[in-house]
Length: 199
Image (cartoon, rainbow, N blue to C red; front, side, top):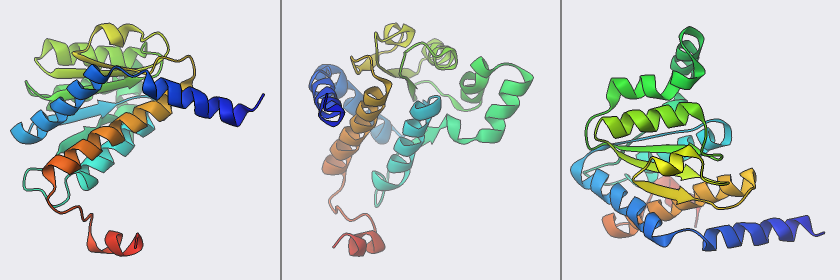
């Protein structure tokens, strides 16, 4: 078996299988958040947490560079001390919902990422967001899990392979970013030193 080709084939087919309507709905929520200056919260565990952090960085800098109205995107798993304190004093299942209680306003966008769709701390945070008039996006894989039943928008990478699921989720954020930059930026520069590096 050519494992390299198998992985490439799986990644391609999973990307092709994404629900374009749901992807477009996610894109529209990002336009809405930028236009209305709503906060965007994202979070996950492990590789999903890395995806959340990467995406927040891309929208804080890349998608926002040069704009008057910037993206207000926050990755909840970037604050290690707060997560450890919450986990140590209450429960690991509370690490995201407790942080949301500090910041969330009605109309904000909340993106929970869980490969299985069944991470309890992601479920609790999305439920809190739903209960407090936020707009919710679930990013999942495998069978979709519980979060696929909870969110307004569901980005479901339909494959039983965690690595492919994680790659697809990151690709989706990059697709959304490309749409934002194409529509909102008259100048595609990402900064003078960046521009010089890629020449």
